[in-house]
Length: 300
Image 1 (cartoon, rainbow, N blue to C red):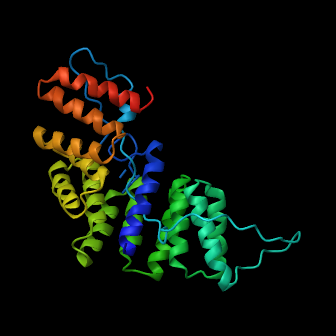
Image 2 (tube, rainbow, N blue to C red):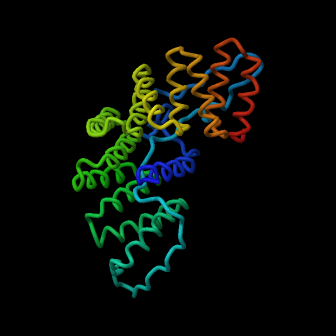
Image 3 (tube, helix red, strand yellow):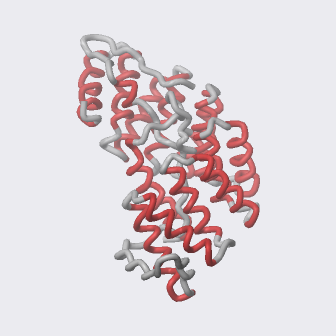
């Protein structure tokens, strides 16, 4: 498996863990949060006897994808913290200890222990301020903990060290989306595509950002390209279904939602989206069980 595929796999695991986070993109949030993006949240009334009360929250999208660099590999145990005398600053990790600290930081990130992960990444950066991977991943941790401004600051520092890094540019677009700075996010993504015209992550994020700005036909174009380049991303099919529904391509929207649930069977919002489309196609008897299933998956 090449490094780009490993990073996509790790990012999808993280995105699955963040599915419960409230994001602003395409909802009342960005969404960011995304990319993970994260227009106002929509709730389409169901026809027939099905109620849509409470479904608005279930239909909120996740944030734009955020790249954890060097995240592949099996988690290993966290190392014991060094013993530090009172009042003394911890010694920076030696070269042979850096990888242990880096892996411990990854593990803490996977466990959503943001404070521990932040501490470990800062320890790496104290020893080597030019460690772009550690600084990028610190930004991920800060974003996950809700410190969007702090995350943006760290990513700006990354770009000062690696101005053409597509991963960092894509990640900064995620944070900019969280902050509602969509024009800036689009510029970062356009820069990525100028150097890599087949970057699926950049097309996906552009699709989410343009959806957030209500430019649905553009979003369809970007999201179609994203699924052409990476057909295994359930979120891309889901957002494509959302955009196609907005431009009244109901058959296409239904197919996109169906593909999303094939890839991610517990994707509550995709099941709900199928119900909306079937209602719009005057098939309420088929929509009703999908609304129910969506509520069940959402714990409602």
